[in-house]
Image 1: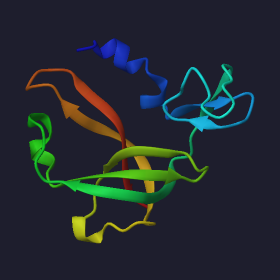
Image 2: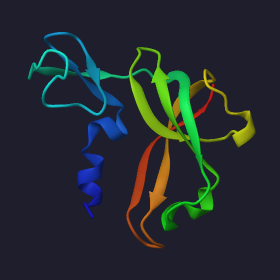
Image 3: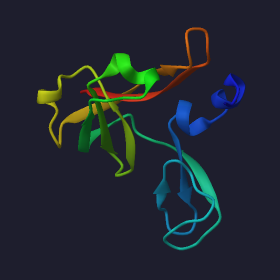
Length: 129
């Protein structure tokens, strides 16, 4: 497992940053080293918008040990307002109320904890807008 310091230094996880190809403008989250469109290798950091809509989702009813308290857990692909798609948990909504196209905003929250006194992981979750 990586230390908490390394996790804090991953900008895309904590600051919602992506990489935009300098050659063609394609945005990647998480950032890549090579553009799949034009094979360019130069990228600039861009900040992603915190709002979007649910593109698709699934409901997890049997989860790994660190996520048992969160089931049923909705995991979705969220299309942000700039067209970038990210995968994240959809929270603060009942399973039967989630719909494709539902407007959401991203919030920075606790994802999971490694044991009772272990490292806590944080990231973005989608909540109804």
